[in-house]
Amino acid sequence: MEKDNKKDFSNYLADSSTLISFALAFIALIVPTFRGDDFFKRLISFDIDGLMIYQSIFVILSSTCAFVIFYTINRLLSVSKVRSKLKKYGYYTLTLLAISSMSFCLREVYAPSNSMSSLFLNEDGRIIYSKIQTEAGVEFEVISCNGSGSQVTCEIQLRNISDEDVEIYGLKNSIAYNENNIKSSIERVTLENNKLSNSTFLMTKLSTSNVKLFFSFDTAAISKSIKKLTLPLNYTANDRKVIFRNVDIQR
Image (cartoon, rainbow, N blue to C red; front, side, top):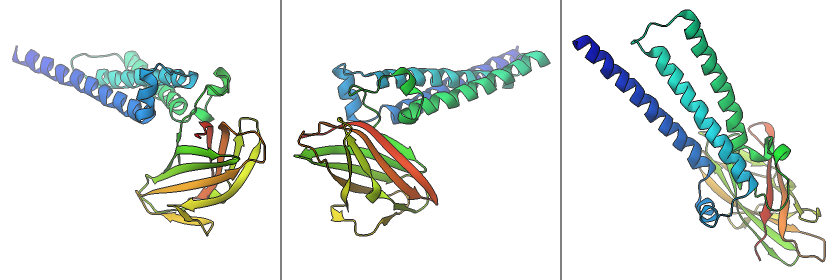
């Protein structure tokens, strides 16, 4: 009787740990994907675009894969039942499939502009791609793009989320396209409201920097949005490319 009680208690702890692990994994998926006041404002006003639905689907699929992983590992470690080799290998196979599927789903969640979303979504002005991109330990966030006449200024916050210093090069090579597919090369760059005189600047580990990119569109029509903003950068000894799409221009 006492032995059975111990088994029941151990099974209860195992099941509880599975549910707690799943809950933590779900929170870890939700917070980075849909963080910020902008998401909640759009949700309250039912301003839901195709990309948000697309990401939500893959968040659910990723969460399902995470639950399958935790559940199968729990079953494999459970001592309450004796399982055949065939059943064990079945659990191993299911776990590997769930890990592979979760990896694919996470790619679709965290890198929407570089994922398969273009195969399912029309790239028009209604789709607002993520304003936060992460590339090799540096997080880029478009704070705003403001326009005055043919001039457009985009403020971007860079966050070094790695544990190493990073030297950023290439912001002066940034390119923007407006909704009419008119290209504009950058005129100047400021770092913390000071003109960036050198082509490079250093970001110490776990630091934040604010830059402003100044563009001028050679057109009589007033630009309403940035259809594509490309930052061709070089850091950590590799070429990087950060791309933002469909950023509204505030006037």
